Image 1 (spheres, rainbow, N blue to C red):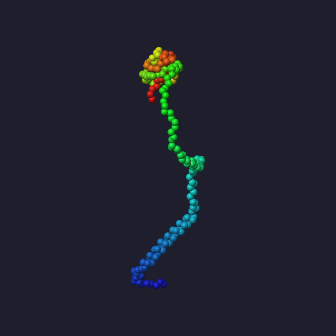
Image 2 (cartoon, rainbow, N blue to C red; image 1 turned 60 degrees about the vertical axis):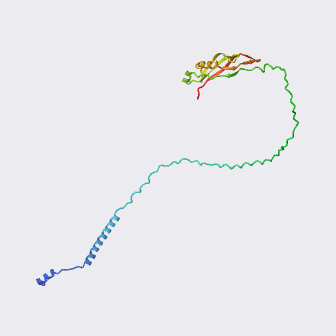
Image 3 (cartoon, helix red, strand yellow; image 1 turned 135 degrees about the vertical axis):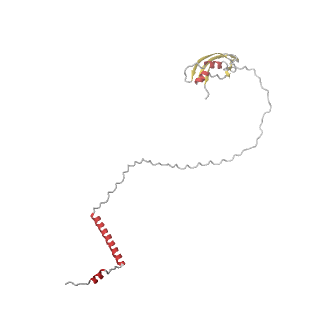
Length: 221
């Protein structure tokens, strides 16, 4: 049969309190945390080993367009040889000058000039006409306004006193050589005022026919 315990003893056992030191509780708690962390690490390592890990594909390098370098020709600098300096000419030898002057025989007598009655030939007193006064012609307003240049050939006679007689136009032309009469009047007016030294024949003035003169009309630049 079972042993019987009095009720007072049972109540005393239930009311008794069990006490655990604080250091032991702290050690138990830290040990539980360490076991949990170790378990988690082991679980993670097993998962990494079980996973088929593949490295990421390598990135291809970027494509670079081919570079065409221009053909470079080498530059050659030629060095000219140094010229030999020109040799100086030998020094000139001093020349001795004799400064002594000996008087010579110089005639001192003078004779009067001799006058002869020789007559000069006609060729000596004959000469061609010589222009003395040739005024410039007046530029026609019409030609000046149109910017025309040219010339006129005039034929005339030189009288015995050197004036101009019977002037006439042989031909008038512009700068391009085309015939024109725009300068004729101005050329005749200028020729009529010409003055000449007349033609001399055996010392006597004579008329000169068929004299031609070119009168040029050119604008100032």
